[in-house]
Amino acid sequence: MKEFLRMENMSKKFGEVYANKEINLSVMEGEVHTLLGENGAGKSTLMNIVTGLYQPTGGDIYLRGNKVKIESPSKAVKLGIGMVHQHFMLVEALTVFENIILGITKEKSIFIKKDAIKKEIQELADKYGLDIEIDKAITEISVGAQQRVEILKALYRGAELLILDEPTAALTDIEVEGLFKIIRKLTAENKSVIFISHKMREVLEISDRITILRSGQTIKTLNKKETEEAELANLMIGKELVNSEYKKVQKTKEKILTLEQVSFNKSSKHNGISEVSLTVGKGEILGIAGVDGNGQSQLAQIVTGVIAPESGNVLLNSDKVAKFAPINFINSSVSHIPEDRNKMGLIGNMSVKENLILKSLSKKRISAGKGFYLKRKAISLYAKEMKEKYDIRCASIDMELRNLSGGNQQKIVLARELEEEPKLLVAVHPTRGLDIGATKYVHDMMIASRDKGCGILLISADFDEVLKLSDRIAVMFEGQVVGIYPGENPPISEISLAMSGKAK
Ligand SMILES: Nc1ncnc2c1ncn2[C@@H]1O[C@H](COP(=O)(O)OP(=O)(O)OP(=O)(O)O)[C@@H](O)[C@H]1O
Ligand SMILES: [Mg+2]
Image 1 (tube, rainbow, N blue to C red):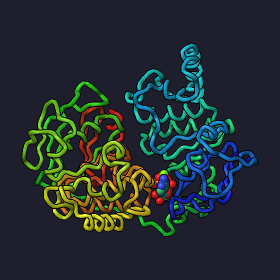
Image 2 (cartoon, rainbow, N blue to C red):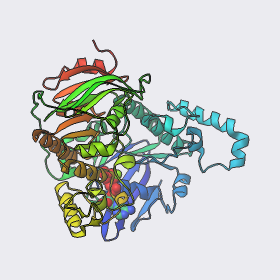
Image 3 (cartoon, helix red, strand yellow):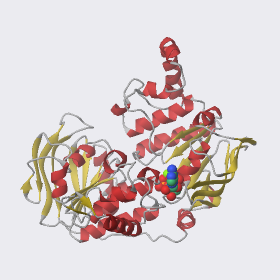
Image 4 (cartoon, rainbow, N blue to C red):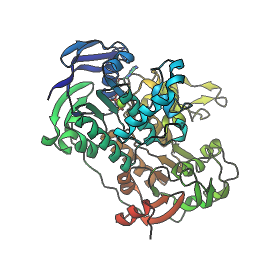
């Protein structure tokens, strides 16, 4: 096997902090090489150097043995390097086709050759089994489909090395299988793949070799065949991680949330809900299992006041909700860990500190005069306390949120929402993008909130997570609740069947 990429002593400093420090990495042709490391370990930064988005502070890059300088993203493309970023970079207002050709063809010639180019793209898609709808707008297609577009975009530009930064975080199990098929096709053609994921099972399935990063440094490169989960976890966090089992609780009488035959966009199988009835009790976790895109989004939006149902009743405690607006739900002590933190949870160009207090502006400890005067010292103290408590890894609480690693951004949403001691927590994919240590921490926090009496509606595409945390499990399929099961000794095969629409 020949080497495709080699990085020697790569370093990247942001201010005084090293995000990468003298990293060594070698990627072979036809290899799937995984980068494994905690949130903030420096994985995305290293890949942003390879793709010319960042200039390194020091170190060298070799491609097929030749030293190269990657001074811009277009240079990386020329050198055959393509990347699908952790946060997608597609232009939502444009179509799939327009996104794929964006920036590579002059407008006039597109007009002339449009059909020919389309055909070419479609052929490429067919070759790799990338199922796409070329004329649809990005907003009309699922997250999995958006990712296929990103991959196709990179391949159309001639990528020999494809970098996938947490590509599976938002995919369903079936979509992950599809992605792995594509990866195997690429490596069979001697293309290289750098894969980043926090999900051990996937890492052990798809990788040839695994490089562990910790605090910006390379710890070790291992052959997949010669390692196992415990060793990887150990190297990654520097200590053993004890897996916790949580006690399930019985359904409580007192109800925090009740839905009575609630419908929204009823005729849609994927973007609506139909006659949904369910309850969340005090001190109980109701988990929603189901393949993403079966109405879970709409359910979460209704119970946080983002959208109003078209029929049916929603009761908070025992009071019927009259007006659906997020502020009303916040005032009723409903917290929300939203599906897409970048769109709904966080503000990228505000500081860590500001993001932490976004929802507490009228609280006495934060401000005086109805939010008019902010207590700066108190805010800083509070933010520092949260940084400690939730292990938010950032150089300073004054840095812009967008410069935090993906997982650390998610921790900010969690800190803000859980600290409010909500009566109801609507948690949508709460651990998406978190490393194994942080995931365990969030699970512990959710269980602790439950035990303090918080009712939790957990919506997660991660079936293992639903099984682990839920006291009861409701399955959603095509906008309906098709079954409710106990969380203690759950009938797993029955639930799986229900998830695929085959409930008894
Ligand atoms: N533009 C920037 N300015 C300042 N600091 C940055 C910038 N980009 C990244 N960092 C810091 O570099 C460190 C590494 O971040 P990086 O995004 O590479 O982590 P990661 O391994 O990809 O983590 P995750 O698994 O959470 O995505 C973090 O501490 C982050 O805050
Ligand atoms: Mg990252």
